Length: 145
Image (cartoon, rainbow, N blue to C red; front, side, top):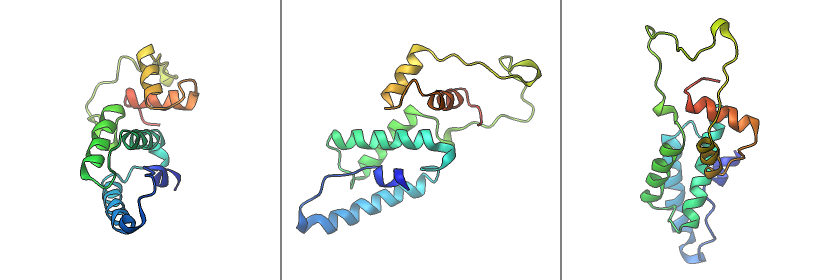
């Protein structure tokens, strides 16, 4: 899958240490992928794109993708940037309807603030793409697509 290969693309290490470093890297990456089964799925494509962006940023900052700190930092930054499946709160059955919900099942209008658009740009996404905007609003307001 596209994002799995992009998750972090490190520069080519020197030949003698390459096999050992690659094995550590693959082990760390595989462990992260097992803990984050949502990654690179259609339902969480925005979060997956953000994970790739953060991973690339960490690489540019000189972080070592073979270290556990790299993946912990990725998790921490990702948790601050987007709502992940483990962070979703399911509404209780007895919850009252939202007063923001439109009457009669009509479409709900969500207005993103300048700060929302800034956050979208910080995540490396296009703040003019309607698909991105809709996904961001759905994540921010906890709606299911």
